[in-house]
Length: 234
Image 1 (cartoon, rainbow, N blue to C red):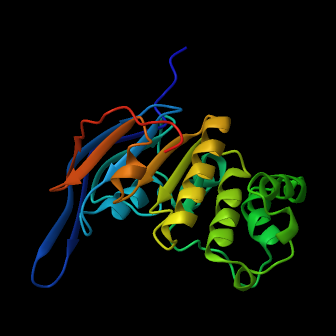
Image 2: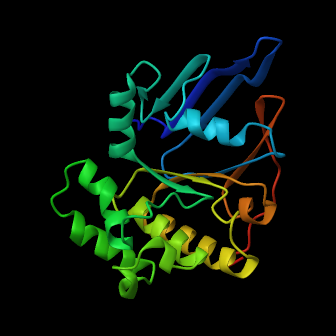
């Protein structure tokens, strides 16, 4: 039986109107990402990369067009329906970590599991934090963690529910080069082990080249970027 693509965008438009003008961010964009694929989306600042990621994840709605997640059109769903798809199928890693400051590392990782009713949330969260090397930091709050440690908590939170699709938006943008390299190595190791579909937004071509396919967002549409095979471990 043929598997549906992990993510599919059809004739995706996004316009933002003000009293004086209409800004076109996306214009008839088409995208198909197969299950298990690793895709990087690059583009200059302000090109609409984060907007596109939000639309693909159902965090925002397009002006027109369809977005299908594992064959299901999420544009036709209400917010509760889209949230259910996100909870069931997606994980997220953001540039700004997005940890809740009032929760410990363990509680931050448990949260998405609890929201979907997982009774084994604590055990899954502990296992995920162990995978990212933070077993000794379970009871620490975000303010007690370095930037790299906070992003490792965020990665554990993303992988703990075993999502089919992982969205990563500039995951090393707030980290120094050395810490960022460790985070990316970790992200790709976990992704490969889990066989997760990865959609990565970045301005970093070295990071993008670790994906199987690179697309650039320009003038509201995606174009293929030729690439040489990435060297492993880079």
